[in-house]
Length: 288
Image (tube, rainbow, N blue to C red; front, side):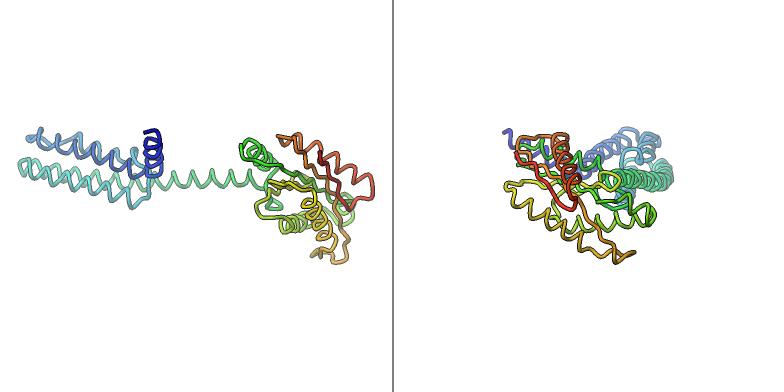
């Protein structure tokens, strides 16, 4: 019984628009019958009002909304001519078509405005989720993704990479901030290509990047990806300066007991600064 109720609930959620159309159609048909058979001697003002209010009740594709509105209008006119005197039915017909036309115009306009509003909100959300310069995830989006991963009961061990471009301030001072931005974009491409598509990749800010690998069991796997990234950056050919020698330092946390971004970040950041205090152009792993 419980599974049946759950299935019905899921079916209703998946077919919400169809359920709404069926529900409104039932209400409209009952009002058509009451407005034509019980008020035979007068024009049906209530039904006309319902047709006029249709844009408030429905939010769907414009053609479906108009088709539904016109169908209800035609059904009302047919019942009106069947049940009422022709002169009264003619008034109903004129009123119904007039208000149906107005309703369709208002409905198409309001639906277009609602879709525009949804599209605008989606674009704003996308901008908040994505770093505008590199196209990687933003810091906040990455943190939410990692915290969501650890809240899942099926989550395994995660590895957090903190990646920092070596001597980036000197590059900015020497070549300018515009060329520095180009470096960030190209390094972001290298990071994206150096890790599996399913991994979380983000720009934390400035010249610092983040990669979160899911379900990591062995240190050897992390070492392989870290070495590949170091090599790919070092061998990279940068568009504005082919002779530029670029390297990155990487701090990695494979904390088997960590259950939050903050815990991982503290350990990875410590490893990063150990690398930077040594010879840079390498990686260090916290594995406990």
